[in-house]
Length: 340
Figure 1 (cartoon, rainbow, N blue to C red):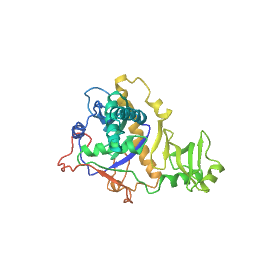
Figure 2: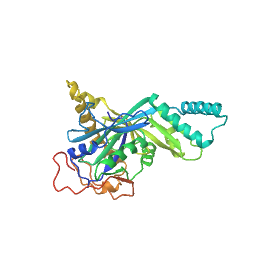
Figure 3: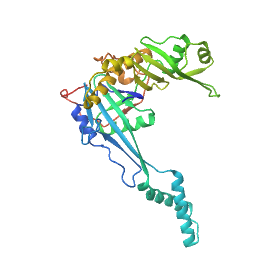
Figure 4: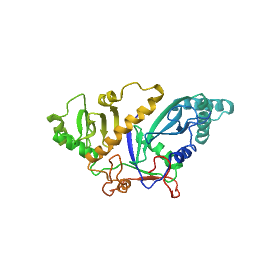
């Protein structure tokens, strides 16, 4: 379910019930592209059931599903249609269309071709931990994550989020771990790594299925090639690739977790089981990872109280951008389900 993580901190001052969030998401449901529409995006039921809820709560964890549809219209196809239109005008009138007319013809050609274009679908899982104030997106690219977060803050009153920041940068920490051949407490270094030179050469060295506790790796780091990716295992339970941007890629639950959860799950319970498994592990992994990076340095985290999941307030921020949504009136009483 969650394979590539981009992690945000939710402002702990935000107040929202499950019902209020559902109502907010109803303002932006996913609708397929119209005939002349190039792209469409919105929220779909996470369970995949028609007319289902747009936010599901499993063990107090909130799960959303963002979906995007894009029409695939190659530029070469549009240009060919424009050339055909220009040739027809030249035959009929004996003149060549000017630049402005060609631009108009290009837009006309695009509108003509869009209804015939194939469509491509993509989706992003979204996890909100209302107690630990996490917003976690299953996105491999920051651009896609930005689109999802923008849609959320546009429609959810009072929502403010910021990318998680740490006192020690992931790249500096990974370099230290490789130099000392020693992983932080609770983690082990696996057999995948990417090192990039910081000089003009832009040299890249990649290791795959290769031990990293060797002098060659240390020599590369000492020579100025810094790690942009490093494979880690947490507590023998979760494997992932940590990046210099504090993203987690190739996330996988290991046999220790899967074997413990095996046994007679009904098909209709699969969604709940998947959500319960991954969120339970991540709720423990993320605080440990931030501790390994010197603790959180986000303005939002600095105001966050200690929670049941073990995440505690960190030092004041050194500065990450905050994305905010519409203002929300104060809530006098706690919401019915999973309040902040």
